[in-house]
Length: 321
Image 1: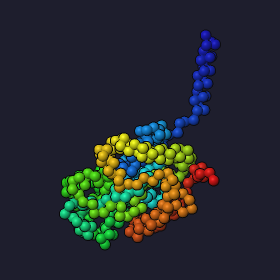
Image 2 (image 1 turned 180 degrees about the vertical axis):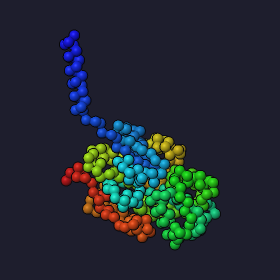
Image 3 (image 1 turned 90 degrees about the vertical axis):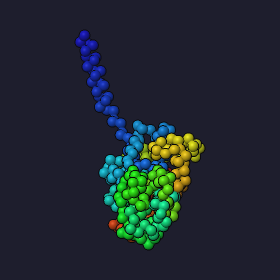
Image 4 (image 1 turned 90 degrees about the horizontal axis):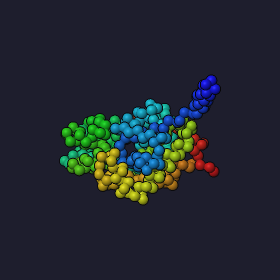
């Protein structure tokens, strides 16, 4: 009996010792995004198993502003943001690194108005629904510039993206600065496209950013995330209709409507993404410089910020020479 008791005690102590020596599993990398067709390949990657939920948690927010706020507050390790929003986070003292160029908006971001409003100049004195976010402010500013107007010439109605449709339907706004899936729904109601991102090529770019301190500690996980993204793009090219069925669910549109929304987006493949982000003079750096100038001159940025650090990966992630 004593021997059996001693054996049990030693077994228990050994199990405790083993548990004490076993490292805690690394929490999943939290990636924040709002509803936007250009981010859906991440959910496709999760659906196909290349983005395992054990290692990656996709965190959904109702609008861009909430994503930016969570990234700034440190509740996210990574975020899907527009390039102008990244400049805001850097201005606020964060140290984000561009991991992937997700998409370039080429018509998907829009200024839509009621049918009786025929031009941007006719927005003078009108109520314009717009999200309180970098991309919303930027699109509004750039559109008004085309007509020689400023934000002071209109009445902004600040609403999150999930309120844009009802604002138009309820007569609370004469025009809306928005994007898909709201864009598709407003066009179906008769709204007219006065201005869209195809008119400012290369200025509305969505990127996947990661905190530098996290990249330095977990380069392998960041590389796996990048590989899963490009694997999802490959899946979209091989099976566009089946992929659209999967990705349309979260957007609450039909597969056909989702495929139509992709016509306003360009998804860089891996070689193009490398050209945009890597090398002595990344192509996106030039776009970021132009973007910063516009934002500073329009009062959207307080001052210029160093842009090169956005493109500087930790040594552990740099390709071997």
